[in-house]
Image (cartoon, rainbow, N blue to C red; front, side, top):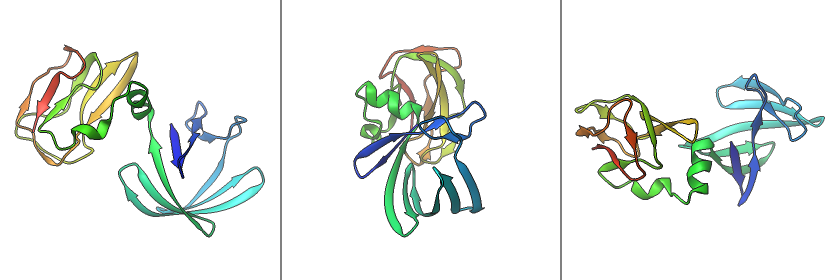
Length: 161
C-alpha cells in the first residue's frame, strides 16, 4: 500500500498479523477513539488524527492541528500504475474491461443487478495475485461476458452497464 501527501509518496507496510508498521518494522500504536478519530504513537511522538472527509480512496485528515489531503493506493492500483494503466480512464464507459491478462476466479454479479461505484464485480487472478475488480460507475449490469475459470486478455470486455 502507498499513501500520497502533497505529491510525496510513502509506502505503508503491515506485519504478518496485518498491523501497520514503521520503516524499521516496529508496530504503530493506534488507538481508535471513534469511527473517525484515532490516537497514534510513533517514535515516542503522539498524533491526533481525525478523518474529516472521505471520497473513494482520498481522505481529508486533520493530524494534530494541520489538514492534509491523503490519497491511498492498494496493490492493484500500484500494479496498474506500474503497467501504465489509468483506472479512471474508463469511468464514463459502458463496458468494464480487463486491466491485465489473467484468470477469472469469481463473478459476483448477474445481468439485471443494480450496482454501485466501487462495488466488487469480479476477482481476476493476475501475476499470482487476486485482484478485486470494482465497478467504476453506479448502474445496472446489462451483460456479463465472462464466467468463472475463463482466461482473459488485457482490454477484454468483462461486463457491460
